[in-house]
Amino acid sequence: MSIGGAWALIRKMDRLLQLEEEHGKAILELEGQLLALDKRLSYLESRQEVMVNEAKAAARSASYEATQVVAFDLARRVGALEARAKLGTRERIAPSEAD
Image (cartoon, rainbow, N blue to C red; front, side, top):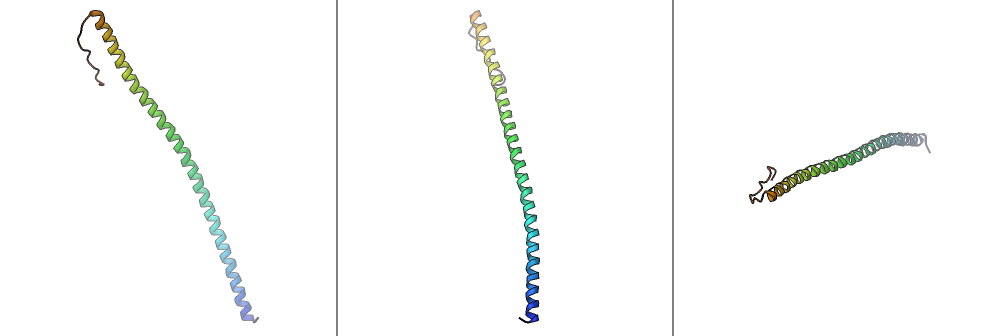
């Protein structure tokens, strides 16, 4: 092997080592980005669970309030029916404003 051939081989080896170093840095950067994405995904998943729980609580609250309105109106009508039965009248009981 001549000196020129040896020199070319050394330059190729040097270039390969440079590329390996560059690829190593790129891999480390990608690994950091993947870790950041993993943390972000974990955060979003936990926030999603919180939002689902809050939505369920809001739905329960709305359902309870709607039930209370209906129960109140029903109690009012039953009370009026009982009063009417005691008095012996046949007039119609007016529905509440919610109807």
